[in-house]
Image 1 (tube, rainbow, N blue to C red):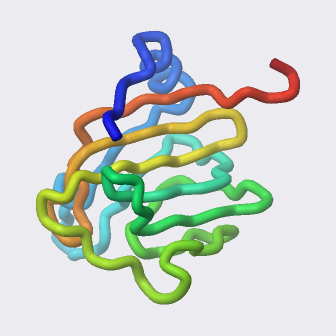
Image 2 (cartoon, rainbow, N blue to C red):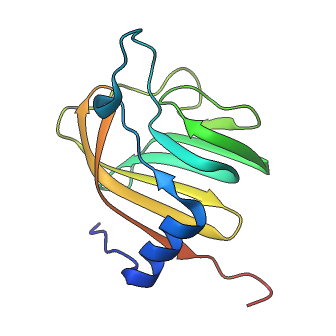
Image 3 (cartoon, rainbow, N blue to C red):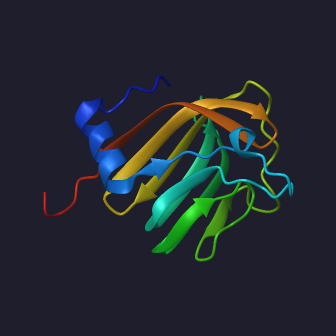
Length: 140
């Protein structure tokens, strides 16, 4: 599946409205060896789902929240309060494979955020592209 950006307006709206800051494991190692977040949200915002998947669409790790739950950061393999892990059904997600192409999809009630990149370690993702699209609602 080839990812295409959502245009300049979408990128601007994403940066201005949600101000996602991608702080990735590999880019943010700290001296205490504490895990760094896969995704940091300046907010926090109320998320309904978060998924890391292979480029072919196979889910590696999927979380869902009903009702939506506030999250300031997602850490690979750690389920935030208010979320249930859907994939895998039990246990931690598998380590990422070096060079594996990865997509991250995170959803809030009215928007879907997509990030595309590759794994540079078993728990590290380098983001190359990102975008946002608005979900249709009954008010639209």
